[in-house]
Length: 135
Ligand code: SF4
Ligand code: SF4
Image (cartoon, rainbow, N blue to C red; front, side, top):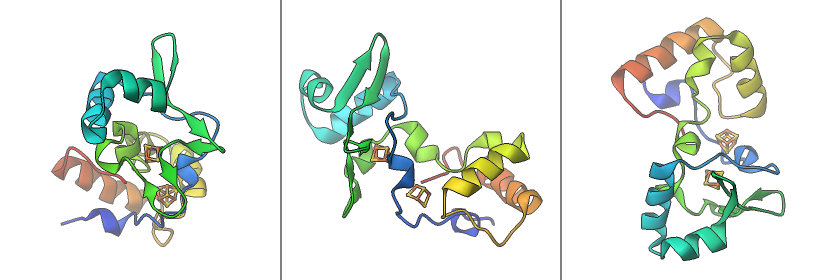
């Protein structure tokens, strides 16, 4: 049986939590985050979200997601968005090697010992076995 650690082990480098934007939160993400934080929706929105039209993202502070702490990592781990849960094992890796290369270059947790074909074989098995894979 293939396990996540066979293709990826997070080094907690924090790269994926940095940048001037964050992933978008869908309705399920928003509710999960509100529940995890145990705060009123209005408080969560005002304190943690950047809302542009109907796009909801997390605020960025000092070049990283507001929930990222250099010592602790993600401080909303149980309530993080599904795109954060999925990263870096994005299914688009299976479609195009250039997608794999881009993710491989930015994430030190990707297993560098195996090539693209073997990585895809293991990722396919993981995705077949489980609905959710990733960080
Ligand atoms: S998922 Fe990759 S880029 Fe993000 S913290 Fe882990 S090792 Fe770093
Ligand atoms: S929610 Fe957590 S995992 Fe996602 S970008 Fe913010 S700190 Fe990183």
